[in-house]
Length: 239
Image (cartoon, rainbow, N blue to C red; front, side, top):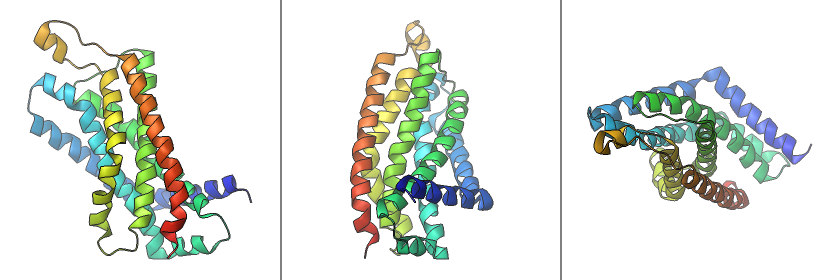
């Protein structure tokens, strides 16, 4: 069996497991919706502030929900002994990591693509133009990929620790700051808020060139993290 086939098999197993249990889906959707509502109340009634805050709130919801999804993807296998069984197979450890990464990335991408129009509409922001929509979609996919790379790696790293629920976000968040910053800035650059017309009388503008630069930077971080985490995963799972 080729390495690609192994990666797809592992990803398929994780996705089927989630489709059957739906435990992570219910938890992440509920948590994301709660985050959007609570942040809206905390920011107040100013439409300009709400619309300008939409990109940041969107990524906060995605990141916090992603922590739950990544931790559950490893922990479910640990409780059932499936992860140890995977490690007994004569396959490269990197293929196991990439398979779980693929499943987490697909899950987080769907979650981000669902949350984006909800958050932007709820906070009064909007995206105009085909190019802006394409850049936003690329930002969501690349941002979800970068987060999934780190989350999957650290979920495996902390899987055998007693305080894994507390240690996972503590270890992850400093590492994902560049990805989160690039994703938020790229999203801000293509999202038109109502603040411009309210303060200066000028309609809101977007900067697609700046957004493209942030997307390229985001892709660069994804590539570096992917190479490093794939190379180190063997040492993480081998006691």
